[in-house]
Amino acid sequence: MMMITYPLHLLYKGITSFRNYLFDKEILKEYVPEVFTLGVGNLTVGGTGKTPMVNYLIRLLNDRHIGVISRGYGRKTRGFLPLTEDSTPETVGDEPLMMARSNPGTRFFVSEDRVKGYELALKDDPGIDTFIFDDVFQHRYLKPHLRILLSDYQRPFYQDHVMPYGRLRENRRGAARADVIIVTKCPENLEEQEKQAITRRIQAYSRPETPVFFAVYFPEQPVNERQQALPYGEEVVLVSALANNRQFYDQQSKNYTIKEHFAFRDHFRIPPEKIREILALRRPVITTGKDMIKIRELLSPGDLPHFYVPEITVKMEDYFSNYIRRRMGFV
Image (tube, rainbow, N blue to C red; front, top):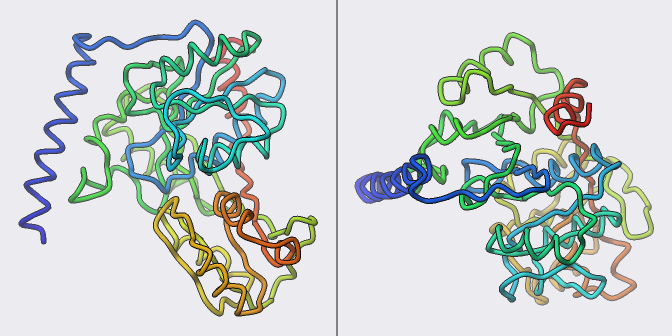
């Protein structure tokens, strides 16, 4: 297998490195928006926790009028669309819709073209004073004022390789574009010595002045549509379509006895016959927020209370908030 993937890895690495070279030398031009923008992204294909981090930033900056622009992965439409009460996973994608329903005071938009998306979003709502771009690190035609790079604690970018040999979208040296690097999904009791060791490994690829922060992701006790919590210790069924289904299993197995886990590829639309199979097991079902967005439409009102979703809470160092606000010019 390596004989096949390694030459492809070299080819893909060469193409992405040449593209970055064209931007670095300003042969290809980057657009810098007038309104302050934060870009959240990664070097890895999925699984670094972008959605919980965007939610965290929205709540951190709750005194701003925020617009969030995503690609809308998995949607069946194209072009620019603002999210409305009538939006569905088919029209805007599962993750933007999930975030929009969790943050009713924030404007959400989807657009493959981030520059056009920014211009049309500002035309749609001129009062927006802060934009957050979701998954924008490789979309170099737009240059956010603050590029936030995420790296999973369990699979850091500095130990990974460019696709298809590994899971990196580009060379590790891409980390040099980041203004902030956040190591996500860290253990709660991460020692300072290990933080320093991780920071040194990251700084082999980042700019020397780029700060490194550490984030802990807490899955809260799952609740259903009635906001009823699922008691710990129950026998349950797991349903997930994630980049890292194993991580979801490991989190929930700490508090529940998992009788079966229906695991699918990231953003997969679970078919009605599979939902009927899950319901036939007659056990409480724990699923993710973005999967529940798609599953909900397949359930009867009587089935909805049997499905539970754990909200993900992000905990950062206390000085992260001040750092972000200072970079935005608000402190």
